[in-house]
Length: 398
Ligand code: PMP
Picture 1 (cartoon, rainbow, N blue to C red):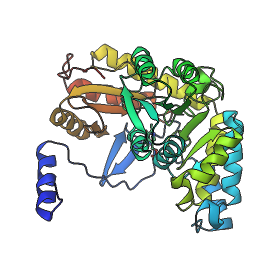
Picture 2 (cartoon, helix red, strand yellow; picture 1 turned 180 degrees about the vertical axis):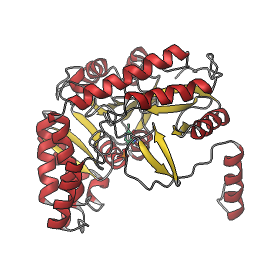
Picture 3 (tube, rainbow, N blue to C red; picture 1 turned 120 degrees about the horizontal axis):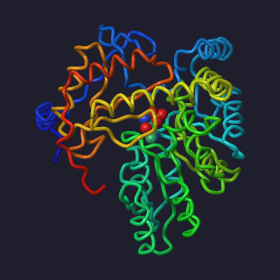
């Protein structure tokens, strides 16, 4: 249908009627549990700043130092004159930290995913993606011209069956490490075996595991003891646990050289400011030296999970910082979110198309920066909502 002004106006009205309208909130404070949002002080449980580094004085200092040295804008793409020594040093640190030969920065995680997938898969090939993969991975598949199969969530039998049917044309298996809306983890070891069997690439997007999982914070691959041979394409973002912004893909020398030559979202875009790279490097350093942040996060997750179980809340099975409370319909999820606001708490309602129809939820995210009493405050507010123990949603075959 042609998007005439009338069609657009009708669409906007419909989105509102379906409780699917989206609107950014304006924050006037730094990322931290207590924030001012649309002019109102709120206790927040929706940020991805899992380790509480986004507002850390050391990151700010690194950012300021690099801004003084190199200015604000990077001026151009990496391959023109935008690749600053700060980008270079960050890539080297990321390679060393992830135990890979090389790492390549992208301006955002979205761009890393679309760029890498479209570079590694093409016409006549097939990509296999978990149904619940992040939108940027799905969009990368669409952009690639390859055929795309979305296997049932974390269902290795379904994937194996589909791959056997597909024959030799599989170019990639792609998965979230920690699923961004459910909080559960991929069976990356089984995926690695299947990928090797079919001589295809395995790409893991560990945006929500990097920094949080594994003894050193190396993410899901570290937690599962997987090598670069198992996961040749490792992607993670810098805007979550690292406390900064941007993303990277880590892999062997040729993988990275290939991306430099062919990932369009790397080639045709302005490099992120060098100061952001400098702050990211400091965040990466703190991930390694301040393991107490991961321990605190784990403690907070435990406290919330125990409290939520005690209240009989309809939780998903997740041990990560992402703790979704399943609601079902979008209007009810919106109503609960509004009610929490009256308790001074911000938890966002996640609705379709971010999650499947009928699976709207409150996505609680925890951070090492939350205190025990703040988590208690959330639990008290959730109790007052009288949420039904039996959510109206029914998870369909995924
Ligand atoms: N992958 C996953 C799993 C994500 O959750 C996100 C964003 N939250 C991205 C990629 C995109 O990262 P970015 O925000 O840096 O574009």
